Length: 177
Length: 181
Image 1 (cartoon, rainbow over the protein chains, first blue to last red):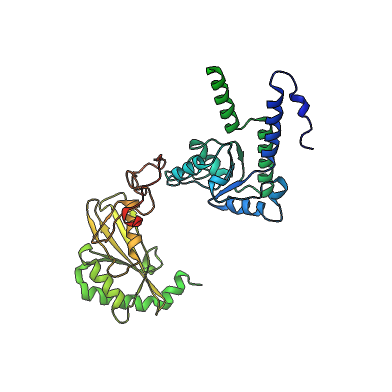
Image 2 (cartoon, each protein chain N blue to C red; image 1 turned 135 degrees about the horizontal axis):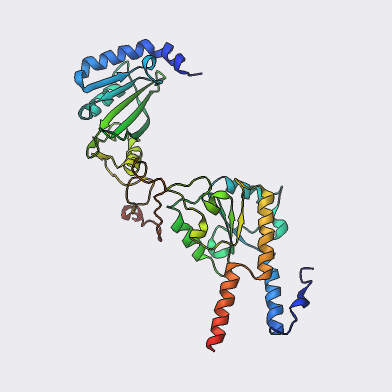
């Protein structure tokens, strides 16, 4: 079961219930991503292939694709992001509720790829925080699956941008008290 | 299939007859003509004076025997010398399956007559040329940027625009008031 190893957090440093709950909640989160597809070019086709029956993203619990950012918690940016599109992507990200994750699929989204020109954003991490980068041009579906599994591990360990941000704000709030 | 040789065999005589007719009708308005057999082009290029552009294109579109009734493409090039720009009109005859190319030399501060009255499809093509090269089209109904953000400074396909002249905006482009109605 996914809850194996839960006893590791019984160190006494943290409140017993809180850590257990965090662990349990993260376990739930990692097995039920609701991805919002942001496919702009060929990487989008690979993402569709990953979602389809051949590779079946549902095996990882991430098949509930939502086309509204308000219902999604995983933004998969698959493809080139133009300068004109940058503020749109930013507002899509901002519309997603916490906790939210970003998976950056392919060379273009990660770094601009081979389009080092005026019209292309040189990596979406200049606009929004990115948790996992999947290399490739375009990446094969297996690469996306691997990226998703890495994201699951990161969510479990609480290493993603959102989780760090939430943890930090909680810490500063408790200091104020 | 349609190689340069094929076209020359098929249309060579027709093209020279048409160009002779054009020269006869428009005299000095036809500045220069390049034929496929003696220059690196696949179809004849007719350089016309800006003032007579509309007349020549209308003639090419409507005149019996010409009937280049389809505007295949409208674009421009930055030559990096005076006159700076070339505006290019690629015409195609749907009935005769023939092509011809018309070019206009334009200096940097000059306007070009809009051909939206002849081909409604030229509307967006001229907007794109304005967006990319900063060439203004006189008489265009709605000359706004087509591809770039409306707050963009400069025209990216000009040779003096930096290749990596990024301009990233924080907010999406404001919607055009007419489109909101």
